[in-house]
Length: 114
Image (tube, rainbow, N blue to C red; front, top):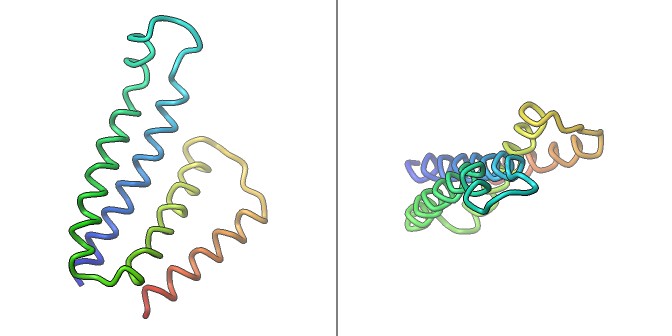
């Protein structure tokens, strides 16, 4: 049971890393010195650190959990990024995307109950 929490933290950190990548990408100026661009895009570096920690936790969790159980739970990251895209970046979400997210959530629930 402990491994599931490690997997969930790993997925959460991966999703936050993706959000940091987006924020960093939005901050990169079109022109100017490379140093200015790098300093403006510091969230990209933060995202890489979060991805690294997420990967280490993932590897640790895989020591005690079947891959066929753990891997589908990564899909929860898609759902988290989807929600963050709507609330943080005000991206539009149509009915097809909502339907896709519902299918992903259904799959996560089925795997988690197995």
